[in-house]
Image: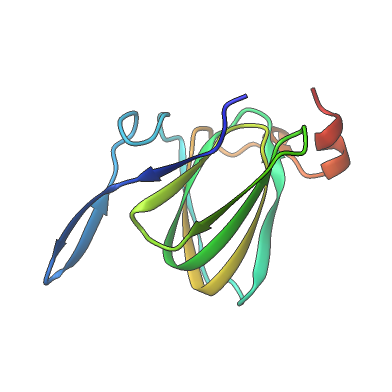
Length: 131
């Protein structure tokens, strides 16, 4: 099973502001099929609480801070802090994830698959029993 991985994206800094960028198949390991963003999340809000059967994603905190906790089916738990727009976290398929949003966090998500409800496992007992 592929493990989650932190990526650092290219940044060009100057007095007009910072430009961050990435290129599909070069800076992320898949072709982008969907891009989503989460905004206006209440302070200390928990999101996620699911796994994807086949879809991978890279999540990037554009502002604020997002604490991410990922768990595999064997019970291995990994924690990450996303607090910079030049860092992204690859979440491979079959990792259960939860995210805690802090400091007016904004999340940008890059997904390998188009949305389909059948790719989601939303019941943790079902996830732990899946092979």
